[in-house]
Length: 259
Image (cartoon, rainbow, N blue to C red; front, side, top):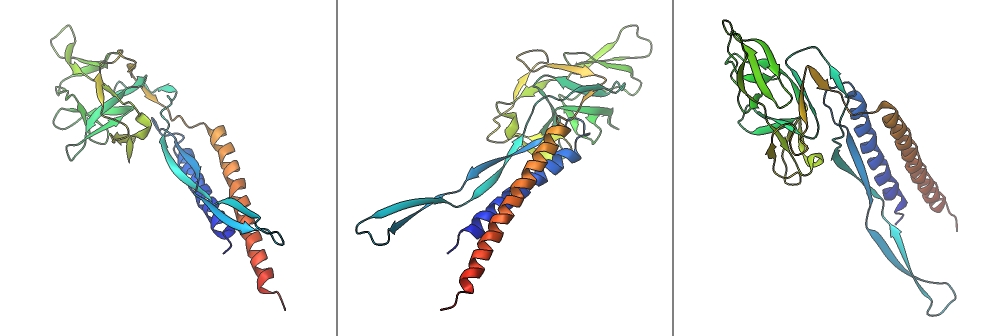
């Protein structure tokens, strides 16, 4: 059986995964806090065949032939993106490796690299999509001039008071392997067995980084790098197609042999 068809097909499938991953990275080049994905490649099992040379006695040769390639989604790359000023007091970014913890609608926990915050109808500080920040911070309805310092302390000005009132403090968490976090969309991630459990840290300590108010982290996608990778993936896909075409032509020649 001619394995070239199947080997070429695995190359096409792997490069298709690479192109789809690059396309998703490029589509999110302007998404705040987006972390680009990568694809890893590994060769498939080797097949060993035993053959005997024609006209030679006892001459046996072992030949190992690879059976193709497999593309594996490599997870997110958590390199830091550029911090861009937004001018909104409710925008926060993290200058470091830490992540903010939020509560999803089902009560489970998720993690994000930054957020545009708002005051919910219940007075709690949440993300724009409604996830409650952890720890919970209750913002009075008459609060003014909300400020968040580099350690995550949230303060507001209240009518009749000369000094700001501290409402609570945003805390950060760290993971041993953040690239292994499970992505759930909206720049939110869940902990996985590979990522390890979150470790609570205070902003500015243990490499967690500082919280920056009035800024959002840009995507870490670099357009030039992605375009170069896209061209390489396209050429590799074409090479796999050529291999399949060559195998098909050889099979056609064999089928057309005449005695």
